[in-house]
Image (cartoon, rainbow, N blue to C red; front, top):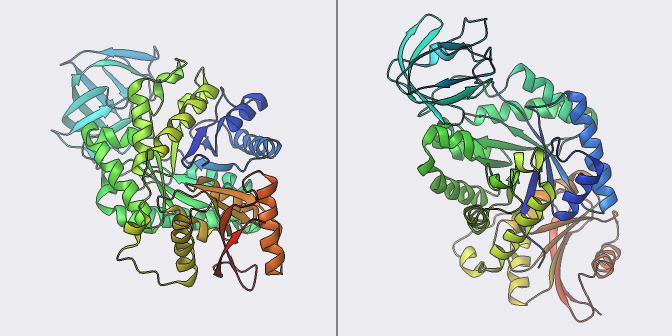
Length: 476
């Protein structure tokens, strides 16, 4: 079995050279994340071009995810770059301040903070390492008392415990960045801090309009990092193609202890609704500076795999860490080992399920048949990738190979769990298409004489959503 769980790696200074990029792709990266919080538009365009060229040279399908910055809910800059805050000291967060900050207070990039808070609220800065209580709001100044002190440096983030900050999910910068991302036809667009389905619907509309010259529509990923998103997860999922369990900001708002159960719930909901789930934040954090992960990080990655996540994500580990290649190798090894421990229970999964579409029923039939006949592979001839997505929502012990003539569909399927996308020319004749598919897998060493496989396709050929045939074949 090939590795089922996909790896998303963030590009940055440590991984943007052609040599390192090639090494991390060969080590197991399936999706490259371009973080629009850093770099210029041209930087991202150049990196996207490099990713596509390098992936082609490696003979691997790699998707590109453009991750929008979202609202800058941050403090301003300090005269000395940072200050040391002591427990019990007063500190002012002042939206009107234009001078650099000091030990008494600092300006705000987020000018609406005074309107969003009231006395008694708890503010968490720098991912929760600094804790302040709001004592009073006087005009543009939020007067606080430091409850948990420490070092506070330039542009660190602000969260309100329990949520409630009104910053819009899409800023003017995000709207320009969407145009940039569509210029290189990113495969997925990740939206930061969505509060509801409307945020995702607006982002999709902007992306579709920007992508119209190329007839390109990206997959939409909602980053769940606000407490307000939790009660409306169902609606956000319906408006998206997948979610990212963004455990950093989410943990600050809902508390660290609540996150593991939320992670499991979100992954379960995504799979049940035929959506993608990505688990992110601090998965291999120690490998930013160390050549091996901690035991806790190994367990964290393995548990996300066992939860059924489609992908596990690396951020600073590959963007700025000392060991980007080793980190990807370690993550791939952990995922493989965790997958070996999984039990496929397709019979139970199908109990009580109703499949109202022919193509969906064929996909489920292929899974069930391949499982019981001990097939070596399931081959899905697909235009849009829907058949492969449906198959990938179930824990299967048979690898799924999705063959398509559509480059955009091929790259998009790089994020689907247990799906290996491949390029196959378009055929009008069904028998020629089936023969070409078998020949491709034999050429790759994935099938040999005597092996049995299941294959699905649609007749007539070449129409999205038209899968209506399942065939079981023994390789001659």
